Length: 176
Image (cartoon, rainbow, N blue to C red; front, side):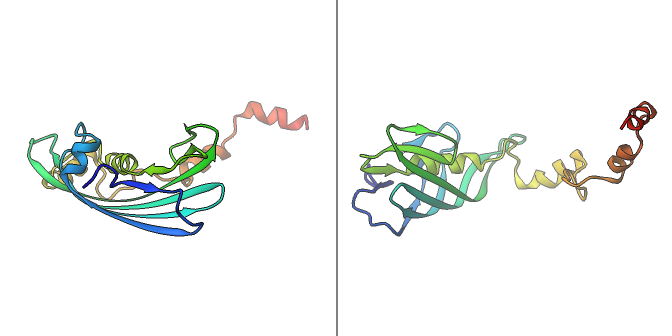
């Protein structure tokens, strides 16, 4: 693949949706960085929607990368599927506002999407890399098998704590 294979010429694009597909392997990681990942096979569907004042790009990344197990040092294939969005807004100079909003100069001719794709894949890699044969064992050790680890609702204990008010506050309520 050529050097400009992940670049999109935005000057000639009309104000509508444009679809771009990329398929790549190990050569992609040699180009964008091998610190975190060096092997893999991926397909990326990028839907670019060009407007007058901004460009919105939706990415769907699917594929498999080769990881090394933290416990056994065995290599294993790790499947990745992630959806991400970036909004490129026109402005005076290049500036990353957030992870999803980037200001680009009005005279920008091309968007280099490869680095963003690499970052999306990198962010999908778990901090703890365990071979699939150890995953069930790790969940049992954590005590997370069959249990809710996080709940955003209020539990019965929290409701009970709210109802039990310190008697000193009752005196203040009488002042109302």
